[in-house]
Figure 1 (cartoon, each protein chain N blue to C red):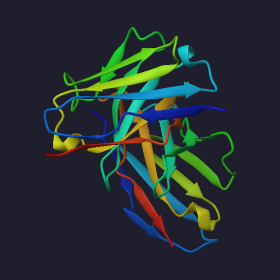
Figure 2 (figure 1 turned 180 degrees about the vertical axis):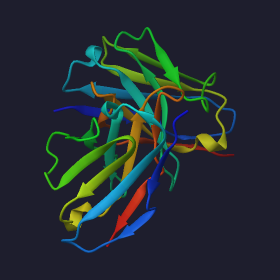
Figure 3 (figure 1 turned 30 degrees about the horizontal axis):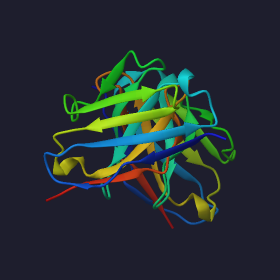
Figure 4 (figure 1 turned 90 degrees about the vertical axis):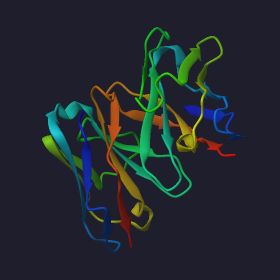
Amino acid sequence: EVQLLESGGNLIQPGGSLRLSCAASGFTFSSDVMSWVRQAPGKGLEWVSSITEGGDRTSYADSVKGRFTIARDNSKNTLYLQMSSLRAEDTAVYYCALRGTSKSFDYWGQGTLVTVSS
Amino acid sequence: EIVLTQSPGTLSLSPGERATLSCRASQSFGSSYLAWYQQKPGQAPRLLIYGASSRATGIPDRFSGSGSGTDFTLTISRLEPEDFAVYYCQHYGSSPLYSFGQGTRLEI
């Protein structure tokens, strides 16, 4: 059974930094593209970032480019999102998602809440 | 940049009725890269349909997807009480790499 467990969400002041983690199990982590998707309170879904199986290629939404860094450790079956220069508009539940071969997000974690506020 | 527009914003129906949700793209693209998700309050989204018309594992056959080009549809043939939720369509392309529609709320 695929399991994705996010952690690291917290209340952080504007301009601060935070690192999210996603522990994966139940599948061959090193064989799949992984992504982060976020959802602001009461709003829709927004793709944030993706990373290829080996970690050699990354992609970002324009809204986070230059501030967020996605990474993975295939030896630990863990996905990361390093967030810096955080803004109020980054407040959201952040989901870790496993991307399938049809470029859909086949499995999702339960999410971790990041609140950016002074 | 492809923008996905879902309609209606809110759909009010009763159990047993048929639901038709629309997702329209600002540009035509390959249907292989269109997916639908269901999200219930306090839960993560769940994949329903990928490749525009293929049901994900464990999804009941009352859910079906269709469409191509710029117009895609999610149909729920006979609504069950547990189907009342928010539904999103999603596209894979470029700049941004993935985009979502704004969602359709299906309410009783």
